[in-house]
Amino acid sequence: MGKLTREVVVEQALEIGDAEGLQAVTIRRLAQELGVTPMALYWHFKNKELLAIGMADHLVEGFVIEEDYASPWQDQLRELVSGLVRVLRRHPCAAEVLSEVDHMAVPNFLRVWDTSLGLAIQARFSYEESCLISKYLLQGAIALAAGPMSRRSPGLSDQERAENLRLRRVNFQSLPPDVYPHIVEMAVPLVEGGSADLYDTFGVDLLVAGIESLSLRRGDG
Amino acid sequence: MGKLTREVVVEQALEIGDAEGLQAVTIRRLAQELGVTPMALYWHFKNKELLAIGMADHLVEGFVIEEDYASPWQDQLRELVSGLVRVLRRHPCAAEVLSEVDHMAVPNFLRVWDTSLGLAIQARFSYEESCLISKYLLQGAIALAAGPMSRRSPGLSDQERAENLRLRRVNFQSLPPDVYPHIVEMAVPLVEGGSADLYDTFGVDLLVAGIESLSLRRGDG
DNA sequence: ACCTGAACACCGTTCAAGT
DNA sequence: ACCTGAACACCGTTCAAGT
Image (cartoon, rainbow over all chains, first blue to last red; front, side):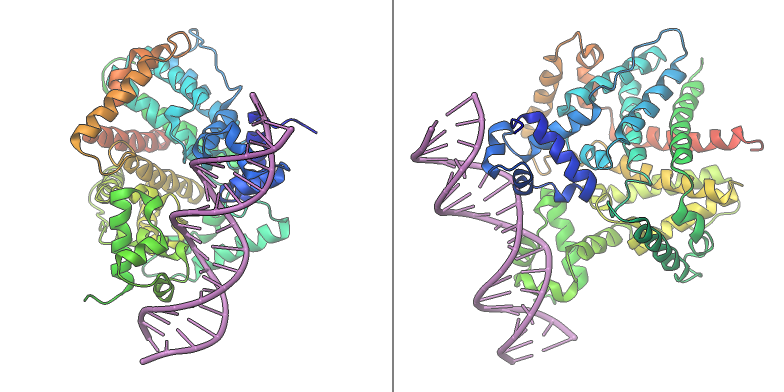
């Protein structure tokens, strides 16, 4: 059967995480799924944190945006953020993974970070500002990828999903209207949350527009 | 001695979380700290998740912004976001807590959410847009509160902290400059990260400016 | 109503030992 | 180099029982 390598371990871990949530990714469970002893994994990963870093690195693998000095930096930034969101969306547990590991320890994530730093500099932000901006952007992209869809309760039938939605709606609607007036009134759009596409593009727009506005406020464009 | 109530349990939990990180907040540890049996806590909280929700609720307690129909919605939104960040900053583990519980289950957080929904509506966004916007804003505020400071390694001496910084800097600087050119060059500002105040105001500005730009793009102001 | 004792089914990790 | 067995020190939670 397939050899036990770092890569197959990471992929199996992501598979479990996607299907059942990250809390189901356990050394022992992972070993069982791989037909091996728990301690076998410690040969490939010193501890569970390094396994998580491996998972994070695998998620961002293959995501590269070549610097395109032709197009304006706004478009390049937008491309970076929306591309990152799209890549993370391939795995339901992606955002969960990335929010529990130290980004600085994930090589492939560092590459994305480096690119965004470069773009900020190119946009004539100062060093300090560029650091802040790239942090906001990447954090924002991860938050977007954690947004609707990939919601809790991974792996349900359509029936269960619908029932789940209905339950959350009546939950909102049965709140005291004097203390939560808008939530009660907007219960339907709140639980449905619009399409995932809208959510993403709207979010990316918000981030990029925010940066651009900060840039304009300081003088040139 | 002091009676064991939900409130003292929650406060003790936050104290441990602030000092040693959320992963140190354990039912058994908590019970020990309170001089009680682990099972005693199950009388006050059905399970650990409900304890976490209690912690989150306690964090946002006392944060109210009264609707001020005089000032423009942009200012009110800014006030809301920056106020929330300020409140969360009182507890180093706040962002950690809020990112692991379901916001919908936290009454005091729902109140903030309701207010932001009202402001979005007031700004003439549609229902769907208002839902999205308020999600972005609150998510953004939490992300800001999770930013620098309250960093990993809670509870270190100044000496240790300085050494920690130095270590992260040389870590950046020893990266291969051909694959991470900007990170290597900007190692110093990256690890120092500017003042916490700058980080917050910059971040709040970014969020509010992003919303405002979306609003302008659609017609009126 | 409020708390304890004992037990269950899990964790991550180490360390010596096997091949 | 790569994996196993046995053990350690932890978890959250249940359930019956005490006051």
